[in-house]
Amino acid sequence: MGASGAGKTTLLNTLTFRSVRGMSATGLMAANGQRVSPDVLTSMMAYVQQDDLFIGTLTVVEHLMFQAMVKMDRRIPRDQRIKRVNEVIEELALSKCRNTIIGVAGKVKGLSGGEMKRLSFASEVLTDPPLMFCDEPTSGLDSFMAHQVVSILKALAARGKTIIATLHQPSSELFALFDKILLMAEGRVAFMGTSSQACSFFKTLGAACPSNYNPADYFVQTLAIVPGRELTCRHAIKTTCDAFQTSDYGMKIASEAEAVHGDFEDSLRGLKQPRSSGSPYKATWCEQFRAVLWRSWLSVIKEPILIKVRLLQTIMVSLLIGVIYFGQRMDQDGVMNINGALFIFLTNMTFQNVFAVINVFCAELPIFLREHRNGMYRTDVYFICKTLAEAPIFLAVPLIFTIIVYPMIGLYPDMKHFFIATGIVALVANVSTSFGNIETVHQPPFSPLL
Image (tube, rainbow, N blue to C red; front, side):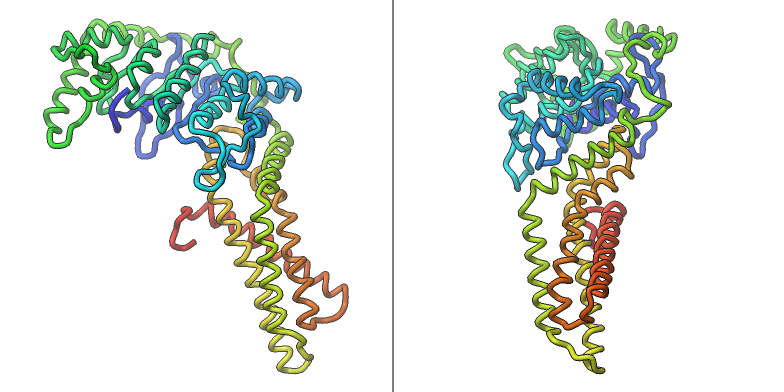
């Protein structure tokens, strides 16, 4: 716990070997008194981040099936994956909403805040990791939902999991559920131990928690930087952190940290999840391809309004162009007009597809970046599957456009030339789609260029 800016999320990122921009970390990482390497810890842990990122058009069970296909070990058969998905849905009380669409904020109504947070936990506990990191799991939730989420974490911990969570300002009920607390201030440890030990420690400093007062609120307020009193607050924080460092609690923790020996791989080899030939991915390339293509196809067909709008827009624009350039003769003026019509062919297919892709890809870019960094699938798999899933609409649009415009303008009346023109327009449309994807990756979503 700690006030905003105390370093809670930075500590979690450091413990999970995630790089923090503009910062470098030094020291020794250990677990159970033995050294731990990034590869072994990553294979045994789950990290539930603060922001819930999902494909909003999928249902709960579809999302978890995708997670099971790319996260679980490649040697686990499909029926066991389905069984594990059903078990997790029951464990995290998601049975009533298993077929409910996740939803998109402000667009599509779906899960509540508590259900979405439980779905984040469900996505991570599919592989049954012994260690879980949760970055502010109660942020944005009311007191009832927050208590429900922490109660689920408590139940998971009772089954033998180690759960480390950051909390900003929990209620007294939530505070009582945790076995140990670590108070942070200005990037330093102000206290680490049980809640009763924390009250005793602050009492020895002459800052006892008042009776009938939420200890969590008191600790956070005591270790916060108050505007206008920065020097006094920083001096109090330094005094508290130094006192803990020299206290019995702090000395005991320091002595345990110094007794690090051995190698984590050797001591916990039985718990280590197998990986094949040093690959960072649990699933093979073909399994990744099948899973990502399945999810991409579902996200496309579950938004029929967008498809209808694209087709209607294509028909309207093609009719407008056909009326403007209707019935051209093969003379000098007609050839010039046909050149203008062909130019509009290309520009319409280019900009229509570029901007259509940018809007969709911007929304999915944070999801792709998080899942790719978590080792779920490769970049080339995502790009190919996204292109294939949208290929029918990107082939249908050029075909409809050419079918309407080609005879209205009076272009060369031969089927061979018609299909050549259709193929060229389709290639231009698909190149524009690829360019739109690349442009989205290299530019921020709300760049003035876009």
